[in-house]
Length: 176
Image 1 (cartoon, helix red, strand yellow):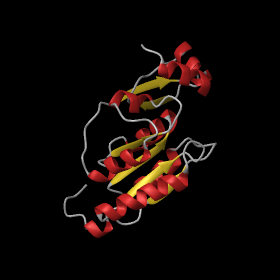
Image 2: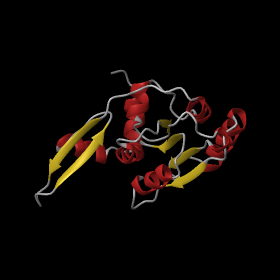
Image 3: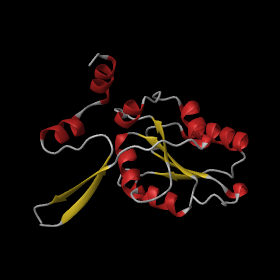
Image 4: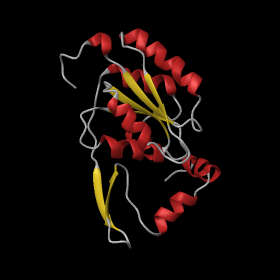
């Protein structure tokens, strides 16, 4: 983001999965961080069951925020990251999903909305690697997929899609 950005207009954009997070709690914490850091009101973009976050992320990016906060699970994070590819806008996580693999890899506290939002509004950034897979479907069309944790096809993709919340809670607590 340009350094000469008018600080009175600096705002965050939150892409959130309403099935995964208490929006009221998220808004209260965001309001506190806005006040503390002197930011303009946060803009809110909810996902929908038929779109895991790409449309919401596109609208969030169009608002030209200082940071995009993703409050959801791995699917929501992946959707937003795909839309952010090539953008200078940083991403912050509020991990509230079943697996939250990226958040775990980064050592974030799962479900700690206050701490995650405080980090989002702090302005501190750290770079992570992003992978891109280009796949050709049966229809011979090529599609790009962005990933930040892992990429899988076949059996591991089917297993991830079929994993229940109860099974992942048990495995999250067991040693690796």
